[in-house]
Length: 365
View 1 (cartoon, helix red, strand yellow):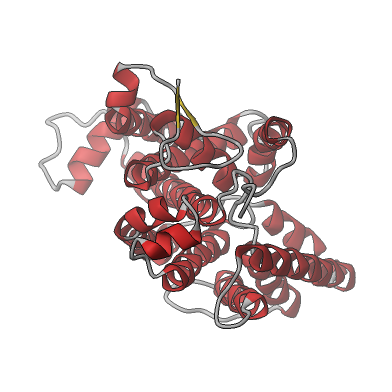
View 2: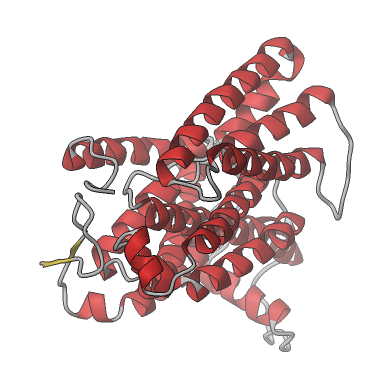
């Protein structure tokens, strides 16, 4: 095994030398993603075979002529294209967004336990959604209701507030961000609890949304969330070299030509908006941004030029796999997606905490 050449983190990223897999990680992940999408599309109250799914997709999405004898009823096309496929694609987009946000946060904070919840974005989104549900707002914008819209606004306002609180003398020290995020998370969680307490009639709706899920999500949610993911990927790729240099320390990065404060501000905004958009679309789903970047770093190392695409693909795979479990484990009852990710994520977090010995920051930073 090789120690990370770009980092002096106390938790030492270890790169697994596994030959073929390491050289072809992106291709293998892409193949796994395509296979999982096909599996997810077949699962539901009505079983539709993989060949039928492929036939429907080829026929309708590529506008090729239908086969001479279509071995599926017309209703199958409606089920695949209007119900299952939007949910599958949204799972991919949300999982990729949360994983990318986690990779950015972990790179900025040099902390394996940083995730999209760390500076209040998720809690802000949760408060916005809880307010929309409690007040019974009936806003509609491009097919999106009040809940996702207020969740997005809440996430953005929370990040702006944390950034302003952490700013000191024209710079934003990482410890200040962590402390401001912790304080705001506590405050917003308390406000969410108050809304649940006083909104007894809507309590079930609020709690169910906070647990996360993709049930009843259609193409409008995909079209709302996808642009944020594309912008986030572009920004992360563009600043990959700067993130690599910042792993060596902010002073070293500055000496090597990185505009540290500008990079921090841009990437914090990008990661937070990614989180807000994902939470607005799916509710609060934890641990994806914690688990995926850490595993991706083990597989391909700390270089963000490889870490970003691997995290995006792995996040999509993880959340789609979790959604399949949520739909099938107790079928026909559907488990909240956030519960499924927490069942896997919490043990991983405990293992990571034991491995790092509780050291959250690099010695000497």
